[in-house]
Image 1 (spheres, helix red, strand yellow):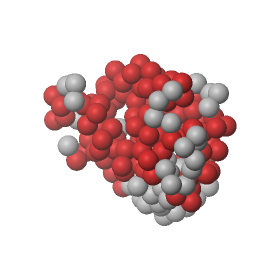
Image 2: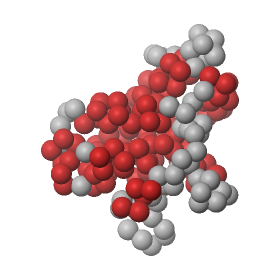
Image 3: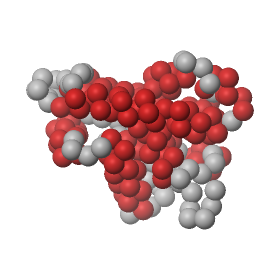
Length: 181
């Protein structure tokens, strides 16, 4: 279970651009992921991450802010895409977690459990002062399909981390190098 949480958290931290700096050392123990796999895993819990961020930002943003909407076309698009992505994400989480977690990850409880465990880890570093910038990012990316938004988040984390020293990186995605797998 610990490996499952570490692997899920590793990949999903990428969606929260304001998480406090921290090094995740479990990367070395995990199989590498393609960018597409990372994006699928992010998409699978993004609705919960968006909603929790909206909860955190409730006092910092108006009730009409996109981030605070709990229903409607924006969040519904992300929920629909998460439902489509889940079977692939489930296989990836199972591969990362190992054989011990196959039973748990194969059950109907897997997705809500992963979302409930990983979402607070992603959003815990978000401060109310971050909310206007996060809202702006959502507004600008709103026209993009959710898959493209997830790809953008993964690419942004990769770019930001490539500019930082190993010690300054808050997240190192376990992405495969070209040709590796």
